[in-house]
Structure formats: C-alpha cells, structure tokens
Length: 322
Image (cartoon, rainbow, N blue to C red; front, side, top):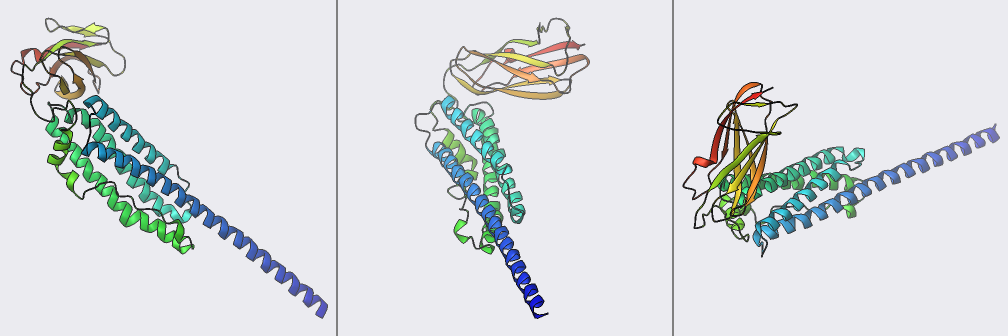
C-alpha cells in the first residue's frame, strides 16, 4: 500500500512539473509575442518620425525646391504615411493588445487621411486660383494630425506599455510619437500660407504682374468634339468623361487651375496643377451619375487672379446622351 502511494505521489509530482513546464513555455511564448509586437510598433513609429521630420522641415524651409519638386516630395511623404497605415493594419497583435491595436489603427488612419488631403490640396495652395480655400484645408488637416498625436499619447502608448509592464517587459516600451511640432503653430492658416510662399515659383495667393488669362481650347466626350452651335449626340457606356482643354493665354505661370463642369445643375470640379504661359492642359471630369437624354452641359475654367477678360473661359453645350 505504501509502495502504491509513493508511486502515485511520484506520478503527481511529475504531472505538476509537466504542467508547470507547459505553462512556462506558454508564458514565454506570450511574452515573446508581446515583445515582437512592441518591436514592430517601434519600427513603424520611428520611420514615421523621420518622414514627419522631413515633411515639416520642407514646409519650414523649402530651400530651392520648385513648385513641381515640392509637390512631388509631398506626394512621396503621403505615400509613406499611407504605407505606414497599411503596415499597422497588418500587425499581428496578441490578444492582450487588441484594444491598443484598434487605437493604433485609428491613429494611423487619421495620419494617412491628413497627408492625403494635404498632398491633394498642395498644388492649389501653391497657386493663385483657389489658394485660400486650399490653404485653409491644409490647416484643418494639421488639426487631424494633432488629434492623432493626442490619441497615441493618451490612449495607445499607455495601453501598450501597460500590457508590457504587466508581463515584465518594461524595457520594450514603445516610444513617443508626436508629429505636429511647434505647438499649435501649424493650425494657423497664415502660418501655412507664409510657409508655402517660400516655395520657389509659388504664387501663394499673390498676383504677379503682366497679363493673366485662360481660354477653353476644346471640350470632348470620348471621340466627340462638342460644339455650342448645335446639339451634340454622344453614345457612351459606363461613366462618361468630359475632357476639357485649357490654355494659359497670359504671361505668367498659373497654378491650381479649377475646371468646373455642370450637367443639369450638378457641379463637378477637377484641377490642372500648373500651366506655364502659352501652355495648355486637359482636365478629365467624370459625370456621375451618367446623364440620360438631353442634357445641358456648362463648362468653365475659373478665372485666375488678375484675369480681366473671361468670356472665353466658359461655354454651354446641349448634349444628347444615348
């Protein structure tokens, strides 16, 4: 009997050791997953800091960058931020980090959305026509960056570092990530306008001397060149696109040229980023929903600052869509 009890006790000890060993392995694996997650977050945060530093350095001091070069680099910053958001979404977050992961995704969604709008509005903000509205839109995106900073510092980072501390991984704390420098400086439209005025060739809301003027060279839908002298018949499949060719007939480079197409009262706009004096460019404006039957189509290249003659900026067409 004693021998049997001893054997049973020995088996129980072995079982306990096995359970403890398995638990130890599971705990080690869980800590490893948390550490890997923190390391991946840190890498993205550090890369974000560098992109953000480059962006605001350019904004503060564009050096000799031309409008084209400046907007190209801003687009590169936009692409980088969108990539970071995609990488954050693809992180394999351990179960304990699910709340932190959701808030981190929100942070990067805000950052990517802000940079996309900033990049989209930049050509107009550097030009003349529509520059004040575009500059105001850029300043509003700075508020979005500030909101993302606040969420990261008050929700995301404390949540991640708290879970790491609970598992004895204080040394793996993720770093701070504050993108908006200089307090609330960049929330001010005037600060943004002043900064953009330093870009080489930027109009930044000012009007240069000489003659300013635009003219419509032609409007077409598919293979059909429209005429205002008689009704036009257009056969389309899917979403029709209006191609509007505009010429800069003035003596100065014009930036952020807005083309407006109105179909039966519904207005749609597109922009031509820049046109040098004498050059022409085309804006492609999709009509959604696709018009049906007889449609009045109004096309306008909005006047640029300093433009005196605007009669050749607009035209009206009657179009039968079949």
